[in-house]
Amino acid sequence: MIALVAEILAVKSPTFEEQDVQAFVKNYLADLTFDRILEEKDSLIFVCPFKEGKKHISLVGHTDVVPAHFDPYFEDDQLHGSGASDMKAAVAVFMHVLKHHPELQEKYNLSFIAYTREEGTAIHDNGLYSLIEAFPEYFDSVDLAILGEPTNNTIQIGCVGSIHVHVKITGKAAHSARPWNGENALYKAIPFIQGIEKIKEKKQTLFGVDFFDVLEITESQSDPGRTTIPENWTCNLNYRFAPTQTLEEAEETLKQTLLGLGLEEGQFRIHDAVFPGEVINSDLFKTVTTNLNAPIEAKQAWTDVAQMTKCGIPAFNFGPGLTEQAHKPNEYIRVTDIDHYLEKLLKI
Image (cartoon, rainbow, N blue to C red; front, top):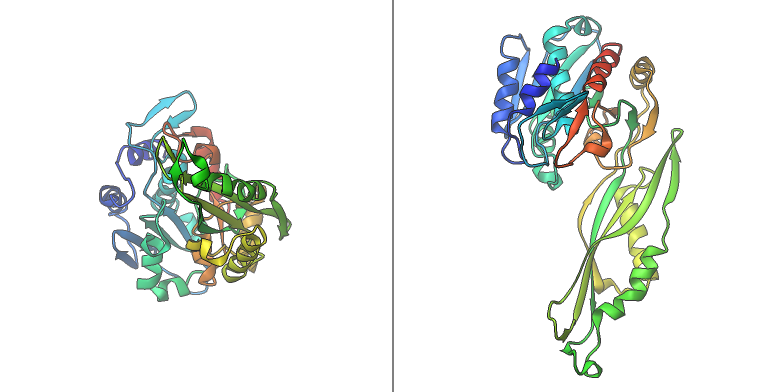
């Protein structure tokens, strides 16, 4: 299995260029019998032969990666490679399970989703979104989804929603030798920046785990010019919010926060937003998470658990990858964590 992880890491798969890795997945599973293989815009669903009366579990992973490609290599217990932790190792384990562990198919109906375009894309470009749009009847049949996002082999339930807001504060341009003729937009922005800095994280406890609502400035620019007082200052704000709010409620919360900091409605606009992932606590969800016997935490990030739960499917994040290694230029995963992950997964 570790050799398989190294093999898939050797295949380049930046976002929007996943054709080779998807062909690798198809080729590896080519000698297996499936009820159906569904494909949409390079994303794939492999549906194992179904048996009446068994619950349907979907193993879900994306094949695109963030770091620039480099040849995988071993260093003691570490396997380095682009996407090693996020999340090709989990994808490889799912492939290995389908091919070498038929006993799991005696217990459940299984399927495997290998999808594209997850990293940094808008929701409508996301490969899982394309599959949901194309094959709603398949998703209606899923009783539980396990997403192999990096979780350090813990179970991470739900996920936070995310809203990006563009803010613009306007002054008046002038020559820097005569600043009294203008109004420095950056100076005007300082009270707003300080106001954002004073907003601390807000803990939200749900199903016994702690999510945090956070608001941060992630990008900041003022008009360029070494000898010019900037007329405009802009920033990007990112609001992450627990699944205690709907997307619409969170947008209203954010709007009232910005108005309270002295902005007017014309000074900000939402330009990207995704809903949070709920926690759907079904009997199967309880059984599988109990059988995994792993710590349960909140997912303080956005993942495609949100898309699954929006379809009404109980879902959680569970992967061997190290969260702190995701997107690192020399990304790695621990070999022992991969072995431990397979051992856990076979107990579901």
